Length: 167
Image (tube, rainbow, N blue to C red; front, side, top):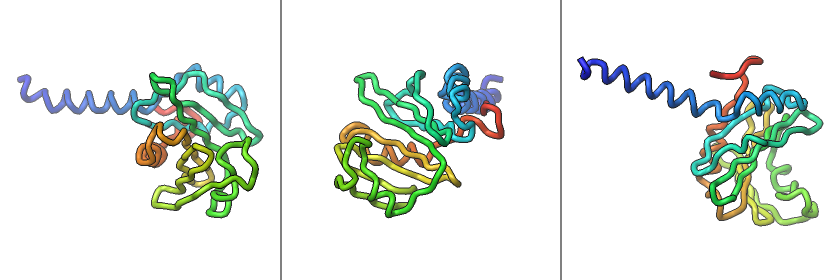
């Protein structure tokens, strides 16, 4: 009897595990973001190995953009931002990595199958375009590696689909 139920139990556990990993943003944090003017379609989450979503993310921006911080137990962090817009190679190189850097600060940019990989000012990030949503995940060079950033951005998913939270 147990042998016959084992495949079913395995399937149920796989579904439950997948479901719990999809909503890493609590309902309280989601409600807070929406009350601060974040556009529901711009709320995304990523899976970044070794990092956990900070439940007190920052929100805002003129276009209803979303920003959250992922932290590691040792205090290192990565920042996810999602905004409306587009990106092209010229913008990739033409925008400094840090807002406090001058426009002429050195930035390198490589395009690949996921989007754009940028480095500059001690930071690196992956940018990807999903429809009209620009998803960016950045951290200090030496924290999360390039492959982890790329995989996380490639797997970025919306928390809210069609106006209601995903299960």
